[in-house]
Each structure stands twice: as C-alpha cells, then as structure tokens.
Length: 234
Image (tube, rainbow, N blue to C red; front, side, top):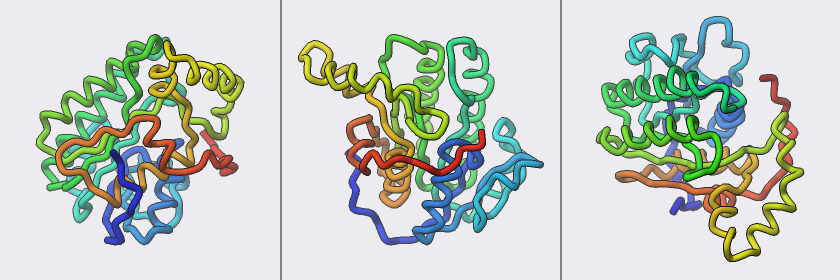
C-alpha cells in the first residue's frame, strides 16, 4: 500500500527519462515540493527539461556516462522506455527498456541510492506480451538487487496525445460491475498522468523499505482524474 501522507523531508532525486511523458511533469512537481532534482539528458535535449533541475549529460543505455554524477541523490526514479509501445516494438523493449533499467540498477547501487522508483506495467495482461515480459524481467532483477524499491504498475496512462482510450471507459465501467471481469478491470484500469505523477511524488516522499508494489487502484487513490492540459511535445 502506498501511503498518501507525505514525508516533509526534502530529497535529492535523480531522474532517468526526465524529458519524457511522465518525466517532465514529475520533475516540475518535485521542484514545486522543494526537492532537488538531477535529470539525465542526452546532448541536444536539454531544452526539454523543466527549468530549475540540474542537468546531467549522458545516455541511459550506458551507466558509465552518468554514474559518477548521480550523487548526492538519495532517490533514483527510472522512467526510460520506448515511446508509444506497440507489439511491433518487441525488440526495442529489450534493447531500450530492459537495457536502460539494468544500467540504472547497477549505477544506483554503486552510487549508494537509498530508494529506487520504477514504472512497470500491470500484469498479467492479454496483450502486449513482449512489453509486459520486459518490464516483468526488470521487476525480477530489482527483487534481487538489494535496493529498496517502489514499483508502480499502471496499464495505460491517459493524457495529452494519449486520449483515445477514453472511448473505452464505458466498457471498463461495465467490466468493473461484473463479478467475472471485475478483478481484471481493476488491475488493467486506466489512470491519468496527473494520478501517475502524484503517485510517483508520493513514492519519492515515502521511501519503501524492501519492495513495495503499487497497482492501478492505489495509483488512482493518489489523486483525482484531473484533466491534464499541459502540452505534450513528444
């Protein structure tokens, strides 16, 4: 269970994937809450980061490019992943999602990170098997890493350019009412970007001891489904 009673202690947070769909609004939320943020960014993409965070040049696929610059962070948030996942990107899920997570775990251990936050995916699921498999393998590696870990498992995150599943909401509501489909509908439910960022912020401010899993119902409980009008630029 993810507590929503936030810890007032300010933290130094290292974010991999800070220029992405969740990374940018999360960094802005962290900064507004008084935390120090160090964000990994590829050369040429610095302008995509919110102002106020410290920029760390490097690539998430090579920990040697950034490992020595993680300190003094005590928290590592890993958000790297293939944009707009689809079944056709199965190879990329392993070469990017899985590879970058492995690099982050190793770098985090070497840097003495106290809490590692990872965005996985809800499972089991009937579709996107390669994507689920890569994220599940990352979870298994985190279990054996010796790190304190929070794993969030959304299914689909609604927001700018991610709005088409709103058409499926009536089907979800019906599925949640039927005993035979209720559990799957809850596990594979839709969450908003606002809810995800609130859940991530709450995880950062309430570090796990050991491993903590945050499923869709707990993500939803972290915030109302506020429409997200912040522009998404890819």
